Length: 448
Image (cartoon, rainbow, N blue to C red; front, top):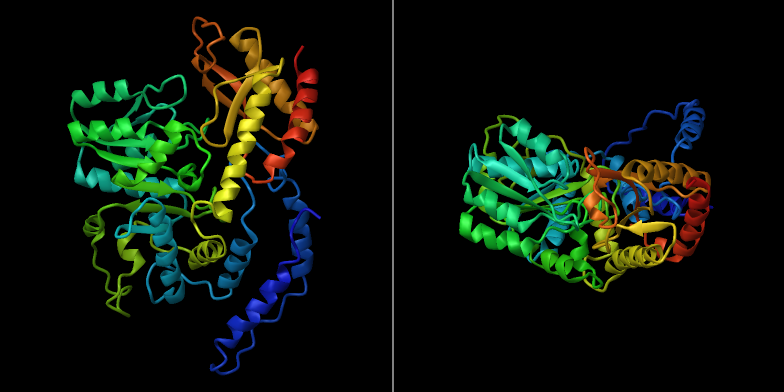
């Protein structure tokens, strides 16, 4: 059995307790279950099987893994009430749960008095952070690494802010010299430091960026949507360890609980070191904020309606797996990181493949050895398809060819298609041997 069903009994008992909490109300019978509901759900189950097995350790492609049972059950339980965490009127209990859960996330970075909330995901969270930056530095440029997520350029366009992509180094990190040169030209309002790029998991050198902030006065926004939880991991190397340890010195941080935080989509989180930025959200509403003088989360959010169920799921998961170094949650991160290192060491010695560089988190990029950029790219695509036939699901990425020093430059072409694996499930560590076996078979059938 691959999909958990045993925990449904726990949900049934929790539902009884929730129902008892409203026993003082006059009896109300919910609508009868539609007799066709089971038929429709069976049809849906058949349709959903047309997916890659994101829950399985042989899926090591995109940033996908199943939410923790605590998150699934808590979300389902809260959905029976369906709270809205825009205002306390719509989500009294879940607003309190959100504040507690967000406070625990902030504490990972050493923040005890900050401003923050949950949102739909990393895109919306980054939008809020850059919106605040734009309000504080109107009209000034947002800069990020050329390997930063494309959403920053889009968001800057939405906000009417200039955006510039700066060169990265051979390890996929923002080049401090390129940033220094650009900052000296003036007009820089915010710099995005990506702590875990989507493509390679590279961690920008935050210490260098913070030093340049002291000289040039721009805001530093840490996009740790992917890598933020690794601040708890004890098996990182120098730059990643140092940069994550200093994330709390940034002006704002984004982290995605729906990635390493074991949550269902969508659950992002934005944090601001200075609570005073809350004044930028000020607005008047004659109908939403009347039930108490306590802060409504909708007063510090660009989003209005937000699912209280997401807050319940996050709170329950963190209640079961506290966010502390050395705990069970941190150990899961460390196992994924170790799996990436095991795979990297094996690929580094493999006659078929060459890795880009030692992974900083749990993402590894590699490609077939030999040939032109075009032929290597074609071989990567063939191996990708051959691996899928072995039930090993990887991803393809188009990356700068300079990430592989052995590749000869070619006129008119600066990128190469490579294979990418995201080893974010703790179970990946136990499956590295079987992953490598299937990868070698795929290579034998995918390289001419």
